[in-house]
Length: 199
Image 1: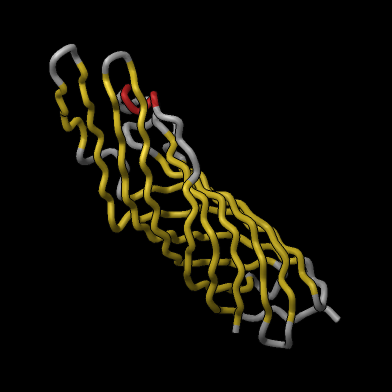
Image 2: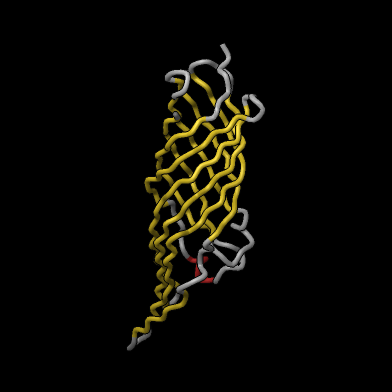
């Protein structure tokens, strides 16, 4: 029997891998770092609203994650360090399609995601080493990572139906900022692994 579409809401927990992306207009010093993914746990809520009683739905979420980055490189006679501590809320607006099976429902979704960086602490500084002196200079303290960012999101997973109203789900998702290439800010690209339960 084909499941009857209904509004679903619930909680999600997951693990987020986030990587900073350098923009074309960014300070040249940022080109020297080897940016790697930082992993951390995330937690949030979701709402899944069917579209015209079909297998498509409007899926919205809000979830929270914290990341810390520390990069170092040595260029000529300069030691360059970059440190960032970020706490952010992400709000995806996705169109979701779920295959209409009764017990196990594969699904895919895609749409846009907004990121609001609540805590945005960044610092770039250089240590210049000469024959007799060491000089430390603060280069950047603000405006390295944008507080608000819009990007695209795509993912897919499996939903397991427990009973008429309740189910568990598992999902993999990728988010990427629209401004990652041509920007004076560093963008944030993420891979997410989610699991959760609806009511």
